[in-house]
Length: 428
Image 1 (spheres, rainbow, N blue to C red):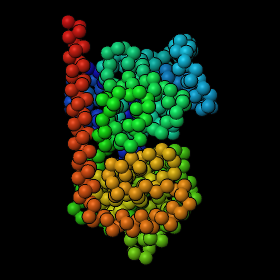
Image 2: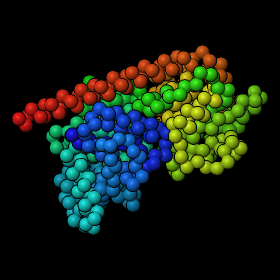
Image 3: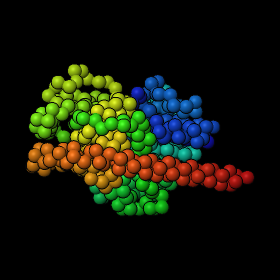
Image 4: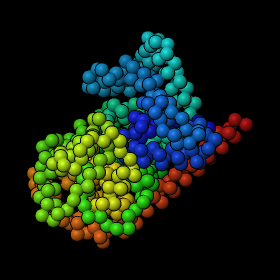
């Protein structure tokens, strides 16, 4: 059996706590469930790919990028033109095939070999597994279009299954290029595990996905986030902030957040605990956490983050104020309340989804509200008060989602085994 894996993150070593956790969980499960399978994982850095199991190996994304981008969605041309070209190709697939073949003939031979290797892997895969992510969204529309094109390519052989685990979908604007592509391709997916139901389930319904193929499982990162729980409640305020194009958080928000946090913590002599979740150059959490905390907590930029470091920081926390989704996931799994600050629709859906799942211990706060800097003090006071009593409830809710996720994986395993058995019988 051949399994092709679309990972949580493309860089190796991974630079985001959530990517590390989600990828490790899924690849370990796949390798243990099907130890005889050949498992190939798409990655930008195959030479630095971490070891998971003897049957897990990297596959460079270079060939995929050439095949799916090329003349069609070349990163050097304006995004608006890329989307326009994609819309044209959706309605005229023959043009896409012609341009792709022409593009291959123009490539240097070594590049063409990379494309051939990707196409062979995609077309011969029995299973395409898509690790946990929030990638099918307007915020990452070009990435999402590549992902959907990969699903479509794999399904063209008429024998492959596509399994998606730990997914958060949307927001996706109606009638957009991405929406139209997702409406065509998402119904082809055979199994979908969802992080949350509040936003993802209605969107999948609008995309025409069979509801019997979608299951709410919680986030796959919970498997690692529950490890090494502390028996004692911490005494600090965990701080994380995500400044990136897709978060829409600005330097002005960062400065005001620092003022508001110190206004609450200083009279009470409460320490701050930095909780960087990403070390990507485009979104260095610790750099902006340092700005929030007045530049005194961190002395140099970190080039790595790990689940273990995140958990160690959370052991010192009574509450958290976070701007990234997986900082919240790890906090809740440890039993620590979360004030989730957001500005974009992308993060709004993430934090409101967590509130829907975990209840009042998740307090979303919109930085677009004029009085957010005042409201955050009362949210922290409420979280501080409830922290001792809600701790076990949060841990219990986490355990429920862990069971749901493991059960869903077993359902996916049964689906795969039944499918492979039927395919084998059809050849006899």
